[in-house]
Image: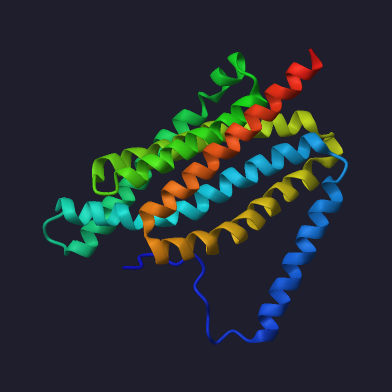
Amino acid sequence: MPLYTAIPINPTKKISQIAIEYNNFVVLIKDVIKQLYHKKNLQKLLINNGIFEATVKSTKDLVQPLLKLSIISSGFIIIENINADGNLKIVLGLTYALFYLLSSVASRQSYRIKKYFNLSKTLTFFLLLLGIILVLISLFTSKPIIIVFLFLVVYIIRNIRKPIYLDELDSAMEKKERVTILSISSQLISIFTIIFAPIIGYIANKYGINYTMILMGILLIVTYLIKYYTTSKKTINIT
């Protein structure tokens, strides 16, 4: 049965409104391409971040129903005097509070990675990690505790990655460009999310969450391998 639709279609929305939104989207893409055309390093950083963040945003909505289902099936009760729906909200709230707390702690430890690893390669490696986690989620959708743990790991690596990304971005741009580049970074995340979300929603509705997760995971792993291979090949040619 379909469990998820990424972008629900509003049947009352007028054609003119859809056309305006489409035109705005086209203008947004043109503006981003124009500003990044001659900045190859920034292009790579921003696209890497856009793919990572858009994937997390698009797939976390698939995981949330699994979290709810896990909590309901476990029969876990915090307060006996309120109904199941109330307990579900409390447990979800506590779960996300734990996620954000541990993610905050992890974010403060990202400097350790910056000390010992190449930051550009590390950012690409996070794509591989996310891909592996999505594949694992697809394999363990019937295991509530594993799903919660893997979802927590996604939040942790996302928050470890963010300071590294911002450091790399800062070193690749001039100070006067900072506001513009950060705005473009946000725009690219939106563009990739707009592209990914309906595709993910369609696959989830037609084939199920498992297939969607494993497909996205494999695509991220392949993206990492292509990036790793092309980078290694360039290094060999230089030497």
